[in-house]
Length: 477
Image 1 (spheres, rainbow, N blue to C red):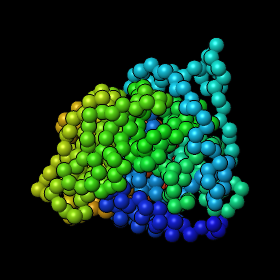
Image 2 (cartoon, helix red, strand yellow):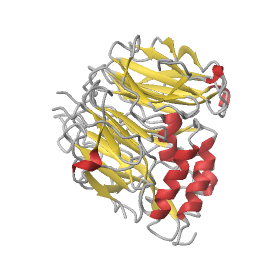
Image 3 (cartoon, rainbow, N blue to C red):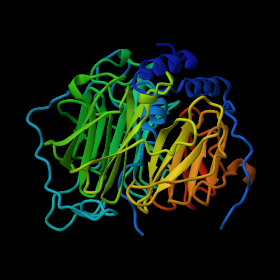
Image 4 (tube, rainbow, N blue to C red):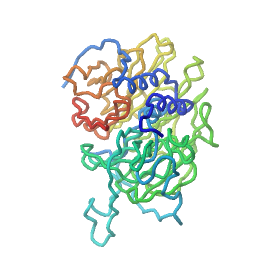
């Protein structure tokens, strides 16, 4: 592959490969491609917004994947493949299976805001415990592009992506890590898998990465699943795949299409496991929309979990709406809540979901037909009821939704917009002197104040430490 990679061609091919797994997002795809080609984000255009600004513990889970069916999958489609330890044109150097599976640790359940207790602080093992593996650090590849992002604490995070191969031309899979909250990043060993853009994303192909602790992580796609229990030094492949996975409260929840189905029209099953365990238990849930399902999103906060199955709305059929399922016991039992968006004279579909540290969940609501503005709707009672915000968002594609709390919400289109009153009003962050991710394609919060965003066609990760008021970037070139 030539060093002079045709970015637009690669992105179009990547997005086309993802399209059948996502809700209708063609306009977003075109804007991302245009932004990558032009070096700026194409304006999506919110309607003018009224400006009305108002003046603990860590959720040690990975950032909520905003609208995995619509936004995160598109953000994931901005990449190629394998970086650390092998070059494009060769199969992954790390074997898929290196003998018997490593025994998984026994972890005691924890509170909603506390991860399983490790043997000791990083770099300082507890007395009598073995030394914790130290990951091999390498350089961040040239032109690294974010595929997915996960944080296990305020400081420790990982990003799966692609970049120029260290030992040749073309793209390789990359996994990079930060231990200082995103200020600096280093290359670490990636899972032995392909992603879109390399080898045709031949099996094994992963789209996402999640780390529950600095040692326990998951890499997965619809047909591939990997687990590490030593900080990424070794990855072992497990059966099946996952369309979504989140960890919290001592366990992991995994969602996958049943019988190897490829959307649209899939029924999704749910499994749970102790964090770090390779043994998964089926949950009695078959999740689907009443019509044609095209993707899923999973979000967690405390013991609550929210699974949304997105319906294919492009056809306009009344049976194609989305469906929300909720759990109050870490995924053991689920309740169907139907379409969470209020219906205001025209069918309205939820197209993104985000949970916050205070136990709330927010959805983005889009009226059918593209003639009425979008709005957010928030629940603070486990999705039994929702409080809609004002319909002040435009009719163009909203590419990202993030929630720091039930009142502090962020959306992104042509710029990033922030609400401090639960979606009643939004203020354009670009008006505050440029401290904004701009047309971000992903936003997530891991605490009421600390959050991340991805923009610049996946080549910039932004960090906020004041609930989205101001942001600092780290750009990859």
